[in-house]
Image 1 (cartoon, rainbow, N blue to C red):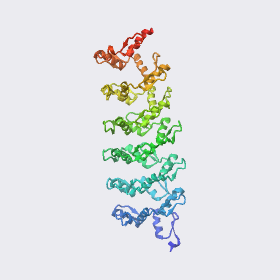
Image 2: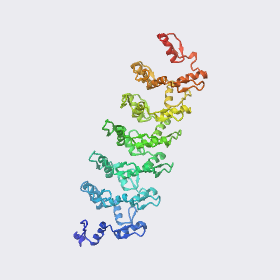
Image 3: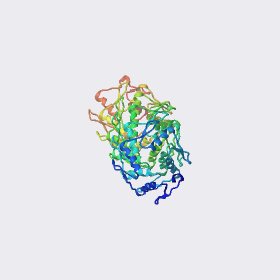
Image 4: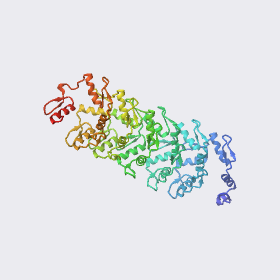
Length: 631
């Protein structure tokens, strides 16, 4: 009769909880005593109640006597079937009075209410962390004990929860029973489907009280709150780096142990994250399901599309407090902040060079390993990064989708267009602290700083000459190899670099797009125009420390310094005579090979005073001194 009267005469002396039956009190007392009288004969696991053992035995027997009449799914407990049936009838009779959220079980509502009350009665004796449910504490305790009783029979991987094992088994079976009614995408878990559905509904019920940002999952909000609290409870035992999620720490540990458990079935390449493998697989199948409605560009991730859309909207919500520069992503802001702090925590073990991002270090390591995993299907050229391959592919396709609104010039990359736009705006945000010179790119400033520091980390193994850029070393190496892969289709002349070929092609086309505003003279390259402008301004910023002579170009100063150093790196293979310029050596070689590129009838440099013609501009210049009264 105590069931109907709500009388609870049996009270626990340890916690004060009351029960209507003495058997229930007895069962409850085992929580405090830790006594587990009922043991499983198959695996040795112990239980506090015989009913729990009976339920557990079904795992070994595989018995699932309770079947759903709607979808045919079977369960080992009637209560689990009852709970499952609510998916079909969508019955949620238990409603939260604080936020209005509904649940299909009273226990779920009770658990949910602790979010509003902040109550966490179950505390871990090892680390002090508190939980709102005893089941969560039990699961957490396995981190300390290392217990993983549920083992996968296919790959041997172990788990601390049967639900995690069940979820893992779908990787092997390929089963995805939960399907989205809007787009047809399937999922392993109902919770993932629920999360996915918010993409279609746009629902974001969980709001951050600090910054107002909204989320579609309470777990995402909880994770986000750690940014404001700067909470990072999970530390790496190898390097001391801390994380706000145990899963992030687990992923990070793979950097130290080199574990790459996810392998591509098409090419055999291995990855340390399943998401990275998934992204990689799209290279083989070419799948890009997320399309931009504005420009038609497609992406293989919704996050990539979201990021791309900010190009059209111009939105840059993450602002640097030091210089005011804004960014699309928080990760880019974080990376940018290291410019101000000078922090470079990631060091290369091979050459000692430090980096501000682990990804940059990873990329750099490929230089030492000579790893170039991304190959061009058209010409076979390999690249370190997929972005490098993507950029290279535009050479074959001729695609240049990014057009300058000021001059109409087109580019194959949005970043190149952005860089080009600075020519028109005159923007040079990166300033050298040593000489005050400004640059439009941080990489150009970094390169320039090496002039002051004298740093030349890239050394030629053939002649020992050092360079401040790997690209300059690569270009230099062609002198030794004799390689000239870029050939002019008009005259057959070959070049070391594509930029030199491009510059050469203007000789045939006659194009000179860069015009001097003072005298109207046109030039092939912007650098030549810049050099020419110093004639009008009289500016000579590069001064020789030995004789005081000034020059309008750093390259001219460099050449001049060879006079003082008596440096003559260019030697004639026929007579051994040395020169300080490659162009002078080239002219000298004509003595030996008898080459005369300009015959008497083709002396294009003519004196306007006396009519004499010359085959070199320098000879005409020297001749003009006679008329000017200079010897």
